[in-house]
Length: 387
Image 1 (cartoon, rainbow, N blue to C red):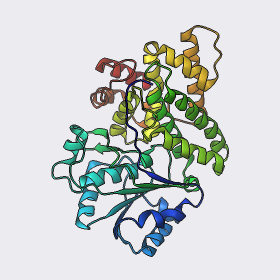
Image 2 (tube, rainbow, N blue to C red):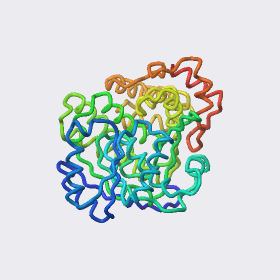
Image 3 (tube, helix red, strand yellow):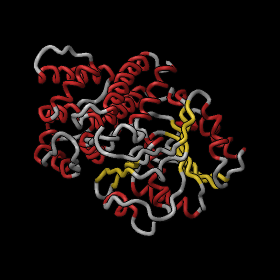
Image 4 (tube, helix red, strand yellow):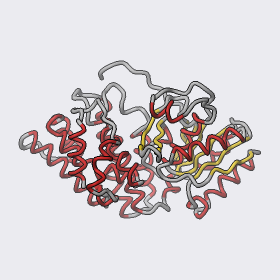
């Protein structure tokens, strides 16, 4: 392990079948005014909305409706939610949905009492909250982002055509999250596999950096193998509880601040995918899958030792052959799995046209920490290879 670090994660998880039964216990430690944030109509159709509302009312809570949070939540929507929370004296924001709703809730939590422009403070200057933060709780209905156990919040600024995230500290992390794998059963297959790849890529972003024998790299490899195995089982039978619970648990641990300890990280795939998402509003996991392989092929020569290890330890590639041959076989195995899952492999399938490449490149933030720091020309090249 390299470097020194402090690890603290305050989120309390209630996991498993009937985890929603613990919602009353979870909310009773907060004041009476709860803002219920959720997306479209899926939680109403599934009956989850009525179940959550019943618990909140039984606990004596006053519920302020905050429905209609869109996928890839926008900054305008965050400002609306912040105004609603402030005007209603909200004591707890309860996010019911997937990662977008959880990310949105965290952005609202730090924006409600922020005395300056939250976008400039948090997403441009990258500062931490200095004023009152509203507590957040989550009831998860879609796995992938890991937002249920981290301080991350990714928001789209439509005016600037930028999609950007900020990873806040432990004081912004959800106070609790309800994780019942059966709540994910109603997801369409494409959403399930998009979430699986989102989680898988979170692991990759923390794995493809550094060359030392790091403990967390072994954890990464185990989580990747678990996701691969469970993905095939869940695709075959979406109601396979063990498979869906494995996916949910792995996705939570993929981005709950554990895997980056003692090592550098590389988030360039996310920067590329988020830029594509800003221009297409495409599902996050699919934007990541569309740019991953061209990026990994581009940086392979700079991180050959780790890509070789990835091929052998994750995909079971034979150790016979040169390092480059073995590493390329690992990327081929990754591509085959992605095809089996039905993931998007080209940004053109998401609506990107050649004339959009330069603008998307301008919207792509360049990250350090990986094996190679990209130039803008390289970003353009990778995007063209992703078409």
